[in-house]
Image (cartoon, helix red, strand yellow):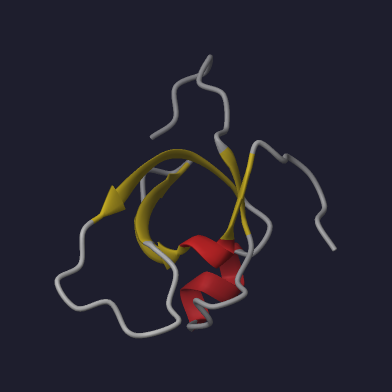
Length: 75
């Protein structure tokens, strides 16, 4: 879980990751991120990350879903 003084890293936008959990978390800030290495990344796919939301849940997302350093509504 995010500590009381922990600042968001950015905002998650469900652009590529479109399952039910991703759609429910669209627009939420994330507080930690780790880039993951992939042995065989599909052609045209951007980097894979795991991100942590305020409630402590980690989610796998593509770089296209991350709006780093932007907090608030993104159109």
